[in-house]
Amino acid sequence: MAAEATPHPGMGFKEFVALIAALMATNALGIDSMLPALQQIGASLGVVHPNARQWIITAYLLAFGASTLVYGPLIDRFGRKPVILWGLAGYVLFNLMAVASTTYEMLLIARALQGVAAAASRVVAVSIVRDCYAGRMMARVMSLTFVVFLGVPILAPSLGQLIMLFVSWRWIFVVLAWFALAVLIWTALRLPETLHEEDRIPIAVASVVHSLRLVCTNRLSLGYTLAMTAIIGSLIGFLNSSEQVFTDVFKEPLLFSTIFAIIAGFIAIASLLNARLVEKLGMRVLSHAALLGFIATSAAHAAVAILGFETIWTFAILQSMMMFCFGLLVGNFGAIAMEPLGHVAGIAASAQGFVSTVGAALIGFAIGQFYNGSDIPLTLGFVACGIVALVIVLLTENGKLFSRQATLVEEIVHI
Image (cartoon, rainbow, N blue to C red; front, side, top):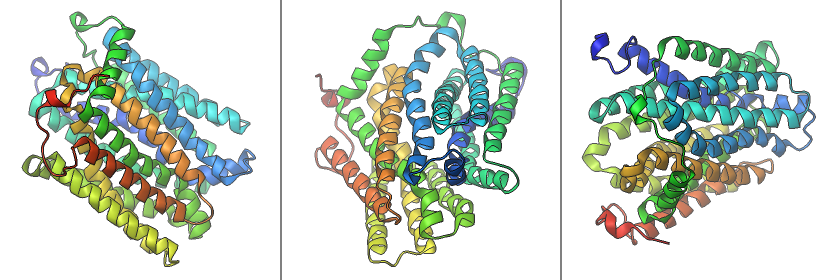
């Protein structure tokens, strides 16, 4: 691609896609590489109750979700590049703080600050793509980025487990710091500022409040945001409990990263399949069918666990089936929720991310805290999240599944 025809001068298309994927990967690495290390971290820092180790994930996610609301106005005012450079620098610093942690409380503070810093990469990456491309080209860039991004949850637990075969859990944070530093240098040297000076918007608290109000008072947006929150909450519950399930229930901690990769792979397959089918079948047909499939599979999984027939292989198969449904659900729910908010898409996306991430983190933490040495609470949590999401969708769609809404104007409810 010629430099003069490029919306990001000096950087080719392939490099641009790779950099955006790397920016988004910092968040996934910050979560999934931790999972095999939770037991070792807890033992090292004197965590008495095994369920308390789940705060390592939850503290990060709560801070990440809350911070997405702040970065939208910041990048519109100061530009994309300075905000992402500060965010990456903070990510490096707070990973080193985690390395130096001598108490569990200090580690949790470092994890929360990591979440704050990582939120910059998520918000800025999407905004940069929107700055540079539109229409089908933007969809192509996001699809290519997402393919790379989907590989991170598959490989990250294996990375964490591999590191601990040779050195302590602290080196996971060292590797994350090195990765963020490399992305920081890459961004500083190669990425131009993509927000034009004339497009900068002064920070206005009122605009953030207005966007939050739109998300919370539009029937379509609110309904699908809450349904998406419930479904993502089930995934967070799985992340919180998965290490304990493989260690305590199945006594197979070394198989954790392999089976986790298989399960995560089904999310990737479903996401790629969704990209091919959504234009032909529509978001509602795919997502509503997937929701019913999620509930049916999670109910079967709960029955297997309650009846005492659960093995590591039934867990892997049924969990993979649920995550396949999950891959067809979340993207479509998010897109439907954004349909009425195109005129405030940027800040509205931050508001939606805030509601869904914080809410899902709390739901997932609650599911994880019910862990009792078996996977029955986890499977029942899946069922509950699926049923709650279905009820919300039915209320939002006036009791009808697989059908399009009427006019968007009819869906605006002023409170």
